[in-house]
Length: 296
Image (cartoon, rainbow, N blue to C red; front, side, top):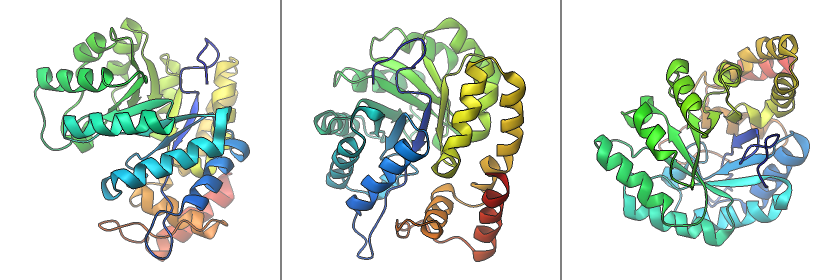
């Protein structure tokens, strides 16, 4: 989807989509296509992130990732952008996944800070630049220090913004002042990487969200974004207050587990998570289902 002042590069409402598995443990491609169409056509999305952490990318093979991406690209056509998660803690492997994503028809790449190894700033910069130079696709950098162990420093984000293919940030740093600085100094498009962070980020110039609860709350989150963009701040605040229990409730346990368990109770057949993820305790699931019934 082409970017414009009204339509940011990857859209405004994206979900980090789960990866459905069948009873045999294989990727359920038909159900993936069905879910992708539901999010785009029934839940107001203009973008999807495939093969992210919520998509259990640490447990899927390179071949599974490419097959899944092709199916989703075909399912949504030009109605939504499709961003492929390609981040690993191995630069060479990340570049290989980036090339595969380009071949599969992705519109962009999500590249997370390398996990666990905690590279110093110069090495982190070299990693991102190497991936940005590997294809013609625009990049969304994923800044999530509570998982990766290190933040992407403000100064580095400002430098990386000069690269023509580093276009956006999925911001899960939870530091609105830091985000404000980078937004003010660059043309990077900022997306909330935590659902509850959406409205504060919009207030300082963010574009939208890459959500988790948006598997269910897409229409309401779309209404929140549209209200803010239209200047109806009171309506945006009211919708945010209504949605906060949903934003928080989806993380009452691990988010992917909660989304899959809830989808399985709401007419989809997405299977279980692959180990090491487990299952949601029945009482936690029932509590979240009650929140959805009350708030949405």
